[in-house]
Length: 164
Image (cartoon, rainbow, N blue to C red; front, side, top):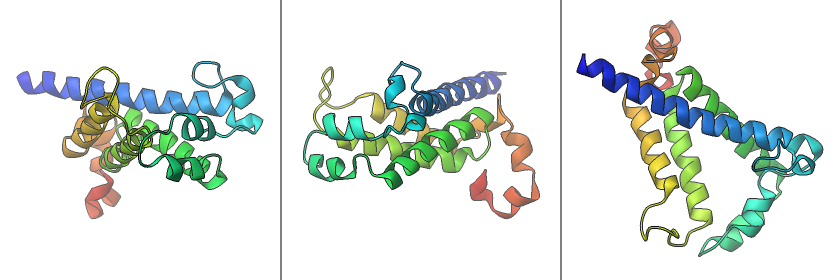
């Protein structure tokens, strides 16, 4: 019984973080006015990476990240990452790859603003997200409140377990 409660918590955490990534994709794609103004939407010709990389980059990697700002390939990779990680976590399919990919994305975002966090000298939410993403990769969080159990029983995943 206790194990079921733990699985539900992991499932809810996976869904919540999946929604954060999927919502970021939707808002940047359509410019719904939350983090992205309509005129800066990707479908309106805006760059989903330009604002953050140009103006929020701080620390030793500032020049590197500012050079990437607005690059169409970087925009495509970023948006693809948000979409694919978000959907994988929401559906509970491919959670292992999504977990490692999500951790990588959040650590890149963290390194772009590489200064001590305002409210804590060591840890900010990007680090917490990265730890959660890695935890999803090491647990069967997609099996609860997701399609991960069915997905893991397919011939493809049995042949290539890293797809779980």
